Amino acid sequence: MEYTTLQRYRAVSYEFNQLYKKILMHIEDRASAEGYIYADTYRGWVNEYNRIVKKYNGLTGANLSIKSVQEYELSSTHKTVRTDIAHAFAQSIKELADRVDSEVLAEQNKDTPIPAHQMRVCFKTGAKGCPLCPPEKKNKVFVAMPFSDDYRDSYEYGIKLILDQLAIEHYRADNEISNKDIMCKICREIQSCGRVIANISGLNPNVMLELGLAYGLGKEVIVIKDKKTTSISDLGSVEYIEYSHAGELQQKLLLLLQ
Image (cartoon, rainbow, N blue to C red):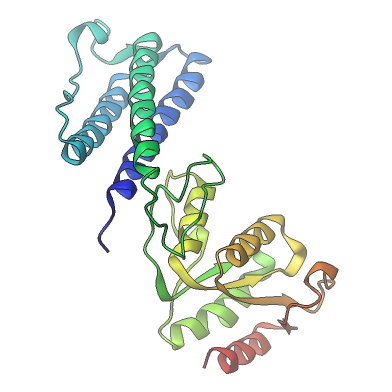
């Protein structure tokens, strides 16, 4: 997929802002503990910052300087950095992020169309479109379900078995371990899928949010629930698959997906 200039600006803005938030959160944790930052952690932030700056320079033709860790920033043992040094670095990142945001706004005013499968507005930042710009795979399924052991069999022997059998790519949020914002990760994956299977058993609020996102993005949605779960009046007109055990769910899904 070829990304537009606006999508690249959004990606850079998102990365700067995420780095800024990550540093602030770490500073707050350390300030309430020892009051310093480990030098290796600080160097990791600097390396991440330099990577984003290079991306920004390549996008805009700017010549922003990359940062190097200075001697005065380190303690006498070179093993730690004071939190005020780290905070000043975070503020410089925020200023640069604000600059990129203004460039995003300027580019946005050119009315670049947003792909139909993507968010019209990011519900976390309020920015137009999704800064991650995920491509869509029509044959990919997002599985929304509670992560309780009570539903493990229905997933392993009901949903996953059939999707694997039909060679359908699928994604469940707890299959990926990362330090990304959990809602950004889920929203990105729902956007990137052509179809969503939502197990509303137990009426889990997280699943309901994911179901709402899927409907709002115009995805093909398959709603399933176990027979113990009471039907919801607001979903009364929505057709769903009801099952009593994994084997029954497996057969019903196979008939529907074939």
